[in-house]
Length: 423
Image (cartoon, rainbow, N blue to C red; front, side, top):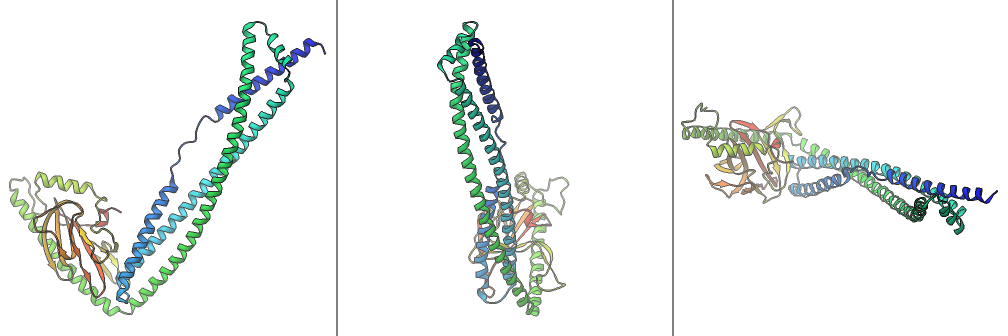
């Protein structure tokens, strides 16, 4: 082979090396320049929800211990057990959802791991080819001939720049390989941690299922025990129904009187109706503000468990018997305060048998009713602010029950408090 043809062959080798490498670098940069879209961190949200449920279950357990001090099964005990079971089931569902999220993350990370492994292989193959081509064109004489064979100075300068780019590319390629190896190791560690987290969640779920099973046994035992007190339950239910009717009649009478007063005070109100409140501009603003906070109102107690829900429901023990509730009942700790759910004015403070002291607060055309109070800490006509303590909740000595009965009215219409207070 002639010297001239040998030179041409080596020059072609340089061009092959340079264009291959610069082209490979460009393809790698383009393929990795677009980051993955941000994913909603479901795991953190589920963990937060799980923590909140666990705290409520812990509180419910303490409340149950307090309720069981009378050493006899009661409807309050059954209500707390039911609430605990519901929250335990929700906790198990949350753990299951967290496991599903982890499974998705593990799958996604495994796919990323495979992609990283493939990218690393490509980089190593390119690097090996680069080293091989560099070896074939390694002599100083070859590099000089590559430069001197240029047609003119400009081409020689461009070839010199290509040789510099080749040197830079070798360094970049080596750095990319190291980076990909580090990413591969980090992703492997992440998957291992996620698998360990999943095992921990599965173990936690098994423990919660065992607790749930025990709580259901407690419920069945409580129902059986209460079933043996049918005559007592029927007597208690009848007394409660009589007391509830008296409370409702008292509230309806007060509302009718308040409506009459409001219409008399604003006698120039056109189209005034004796069935609705005649509101001043300030009262209208307060009423609108109250309505705008539907589903956001604070609880009338700092903590508690719903022991009785709004409306008509089957009795938890007595078959074929339905109970009606004009509001909600909240079981809480002994000595707990009752607090206003919104700003307003104390309309009345009355006493009703079985419901002890009752405070009624008016919020424009809305009224909130707080029953079964021991000590009252507000006066009629007093302006109150949201979450202001209005009294302490009565604790029944026989049943060791501390329960607030809470109602909401819009004019003469009863409202479901659960649709108004925050969950």
